[in-house]
Length: 379
Image 1 (cartoon, rainbow, N blue to C red):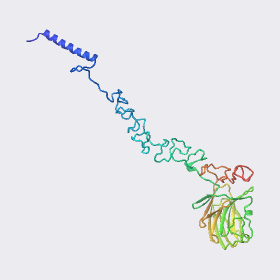
Image 2: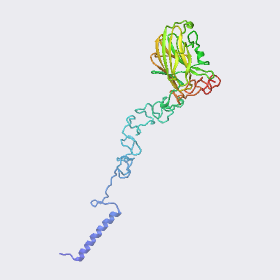
Image 3: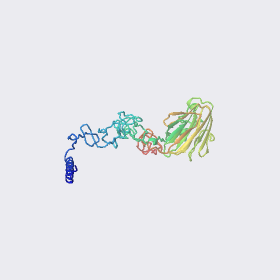
Image 4: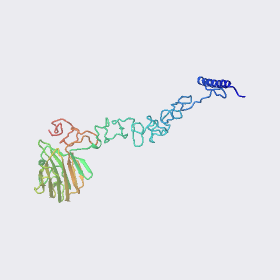
């Protein structure tokens, strides 16, 4: 039986109306399971951007290097993940010596942790305390001025620059002149074919700087050998000594000749020669007119043929410095002081040390006591 056209149109209209009502109901209320008629359950999930009771955070993304990890736990130092812009490293442990500190920082001086290569770390970068910013204990010569301990510290620029240095091989020693308020010839006190400086000794050759501290006095260099038997009662065996002095400054002149002018003489303006033969007395000679303060290097080359067992330099305080009698020795004059000594003290007039540029230093800056207030004169 074939339905009439009218009936078919009515049936289709009813179906369309029914579908429309279902769609309208779904849009206006909870989703309904067509099979059961109950709402579908939506489960909480990490990464859905909703903070659920079991989550510490939920930023809705799977990025592991931000403040919220992919498991919805907050990033922390020690979780083995380097948090961007927060941690420099994160090795997942609290070992302070493995290249990543317990607070997830790269080891650095000043973090308060003594790490490999450091011998101290006081948690700051203060260069004036006893642990400066290299995390090595403060010492003189490190270039940092330790407050209350050092006056200065120029690091590799620290230097001792005394007025005079005695040098022979590994021996490098500051020395000062013998000082007397008399001319060098008067001090030598030649008589009975001998000098009588007070520094003569049997079987010994000695040399030393001499400063005449009287007004207009000059700086000289003396060499004396043996001793006068008539004065001392000591025997000086038959002796032969030869010396060549090189590097004498321009203007140097012979200040003392012992027996005859050929014993000690200038061969040229910067070189002197001494040839001495003596027995039961002393012999020697001296040059004078050395610049003071000055800048020079005088080398003394000895040849002790007979009668001399010991070669010495006499420091200004009278102390003998024994030298190798088979090798040359040098006297070096320095014209100025350094900015900072090797012991991290500042050179200054009145400290009792004869620095380059000074002609005296009596430990004070009082004028009229034999050394001027500026250490540049004896007035």
